[in-house]
Length: 304
Length: 276
Image 1: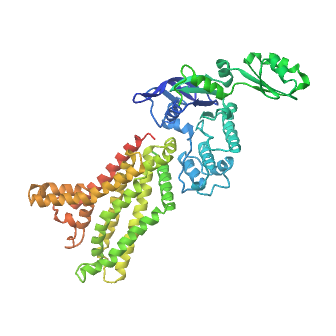
Image 2: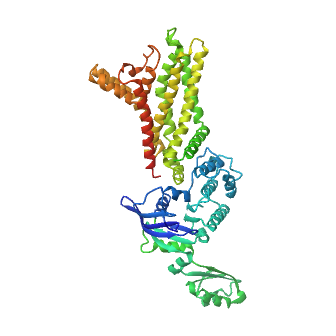
Image 3: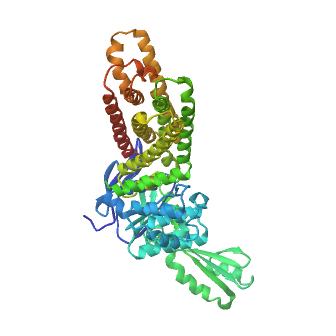
């Protein structure tokens, strides 16, 4: 038995000659919000399918809360929200959730609270075929929250959600994580994941290309930070451009590109301009940049 | 295995079938066909010595052989291939359930639908005949036996349909295969046997192999069992089964049950192998 939520030990999955997942070894701890990013075909879905017990590893070991992935004990602790989740359109949202609650052996009375939590309380009686994509996705989240699972697996969860629903979605997921649920998310929407990821794994051609917190990945990449300075008028801009060694991006603004540890030095020079500065923006490399850095490393020709 | 979860799956199937008008359709089809036979049944026989209820039973046996397997296959072909195609299966399979519970639950739900449709259809046909006043209730036990075994026949083809649905990826493929199976089991099989009988002209095949081939087919076994259990000398209009004098009707029934059980176990095995 292991205290870890998820333990991968030399995990491999091959489909014929194609290795979808190659020699992955890692452990995921309780309460971690782990985000998996990678290009299409990088092995995210295959990895998820193995965690969920939908497909068997070709070799290596995979345990969920100490039980083999796919075993009844592992599935009892795990909940899944598939990408573009599908339900039987003939049933209502309430009926659908009650069905899933019964399958989990939970009290069906919980479904009203869940519908309310995902903002579907008023649509519960309507047939699922009348739901928009966003509503179906929220019903999918409600389904995944039945019985407070200890591991939540979310596959591209926010595709098709509007910004308000997205925020609500992450609020709910984060509150689960705060109570100790481990959240495993795969996503293409990297920028919006930044605030909701304790740990990021970048996959490339079935292998782990990077593993760490946003900060540690940032340090590893040594990608530059951008500082944008906007002046109150056009006059001081050329002097700013010269002194800060930046480049002018329009009549009133200058952009400076520097290493992360040089930011404070630049800030001092910017402060010297005093009232001439209207606004300063500091833009550290985002998850997008970090992802591009790691996925393009070694060879850049494998990206679709 | 938990009976509660089997019941959950069964109730779910029933609910979906009600919503999709499947239940109504199945009942309507059987009631209309059985009703037509009840009205028409008395015309060709005229004033025979045979009891009208028994005449109806003979007609319903032939009807059941064709229509019940077809209805069952139509209910079953979508069970796994369709859910897989629509993407609802992978989510279900991540739930802490046994796949056998899902198969048995669907089987139970679909069996209830078929059983109800058969009962309502046959009961209304019997009602029409009894209203006429000339029938007596002596033939009722044969009709009751037919109702039960027709449901059993339907359950056999439900299980066969699940096997088809579990081994192919697309619902349309499953539908085509199911119709093909139906054609082979209830039409072509008899035609082939019949031509073999004619070619053999009373030889070894006719006396020893043919009777067993006949009961080996669930549809023919069903017909054989029900015709043999009719009172008196009514068992004439039995098509290819009429010439058989081999295994007892009870053997035919046992083989029918074995088909249902075997196909169901095979379906469970196939569903366990599904990787969505």
